[in-house]
Amino acid sequence: MGVLKIILTIIFILVCIALVVLVLMQEGKSAGLGAISGAAETYWGKNKARSMEGLLVKLTKVLAVAFMVLAMVLNLSIFS
Image (cartoon, rainbow, N blue to C red; front, side):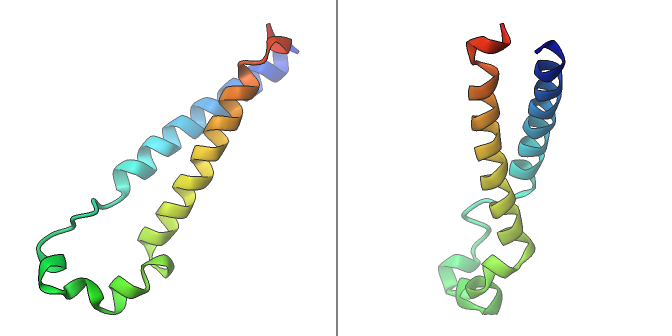
């Protein structure tokens, strides 16, 4: 079981690094004064799920779930 724990720990560290990078790459919710004047209702505002920002949000959700699952698996007593 020692080899499996090492492999899962390496995957866990890679997921942690990727999650930090993805969160830092995302824009804030208040991305400027355009939201005040109604510029958020443009084509890019309505189709944000198809843009790069939408992809980053989806990848962040997937990596967050992977982070939680790996954290729970690594915390099990069978790896002690």
